[in-house]
Amino acid sequence: MTSTFTEYQHIARNLPTALERKASEASIKREIQYFRENIAKVKTVDDFIKNNRLYTFAMKAYGLDEMIYAKAFMKKVLTREADSKGNVLVERLQDSRYQDLATAFNFSESGANFNSNVSAYGATIDSYVRQNLETSAGADDEGVRLALYFQRKASTIKSAYSILADKALAEVVRTALGIPSEAARGSIDAQANLIKRKLDISSLKNPDDLDKLLKRFTIMWDTQNNPPSSPALTLFGGSDTGLNADMLLKLQSIRLGGR
Image (cartoon, helix red, strand yellow):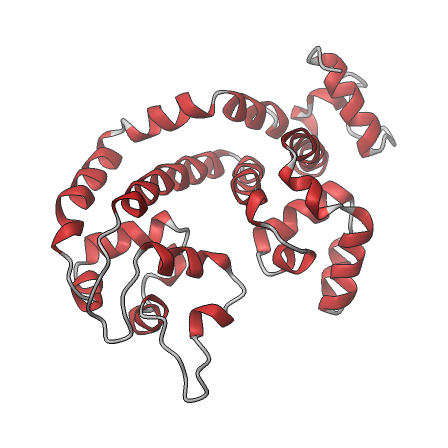
């Protein structure tokens, strides 16, 4: 079995090639072609939602597969519907996926005047391919999917609360920093303060610091989920070594010829 660390590093170091290969798959190519040929025909939010193929493509592109069924709710998101007090629904949602979708598919509150945004279409297609790459990776190893997802979202993380609002981001951070799962039962403020003490959020915008965090995550994921396949651990003949994450990271770097 390939370790999470090894597989993630392989994909991350060859990401353009991996994305190109994924985009060339027949089923992916068909959906991209359909999207390109039909999205310009959409004039209203109802046109968009009623075309299940276009709607599903967009929802998958922004990682909202689990909300495909909730069309009435998504219509409110897409049209930036506000309540009687003027509070816009999508702006109140902590999950940035909804805001990204609403920005790319910008309908007015009346449901008409859809902005034909070519650059947003291109970004949607790119996101669709990336989402499928992450899903495929996750079918073999959930840790790889989480690492790739975190890598993609890192630049958008603004605070510890942004991390806690996203289950996948929170899992990566807790695993990498050795925060016990029991901590998730504490108050949101307590969890946020713990993360802030252990992680400089601004460092996530630095590629080297981000890479180090994800190396730490994938190594720790291996120790917890794939002990026999963890390369650093096999140097010592097993998983019960008593080594901490920093030592494992150094050993793994030496093994791979890093610094």
